[in-house]
Length: 161
Image (cartoon, rainbow, N blue to C red; front, side, top):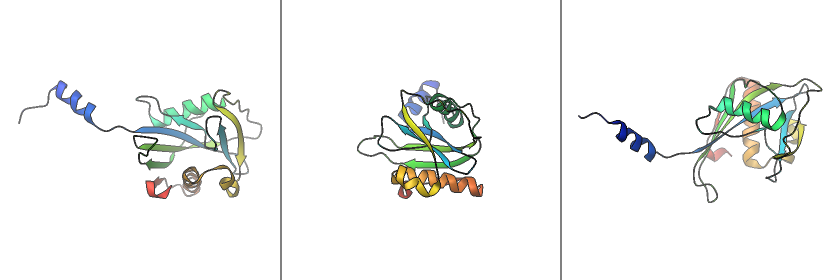
């Protein structure tokens, strides 16, 4: 069997399906509340984080996004959640979301919101999540809290959120 040439490999890789990816941090406060942010380009709240840049590892993208959005320098801890979401009418490719342990903040930790993207932030107790998060984000954030408590990462397939 002839070996594959570089040109064949480039063509083959270029023909593969692609997907979108984002990474976020689950940052908690001393009483165990979770830091949620309100993007100015969405109607709902979410975890701090965002879209990965081309070739960027998820943990590095998480750290970069948290630094940009909140002015916090953190090293993401263990992976808590991976969620796969299929394409839909608005989004032509699947989406993979990564949620990492963003650690616990100390009282008085300065947070500087990125005005271009965020309107507000709150540390929210788990029982108030439904007031802030739509179901598809609620599933991801709730799974991250469970994973943090149990030490077992969670995979969320599309049918769960």
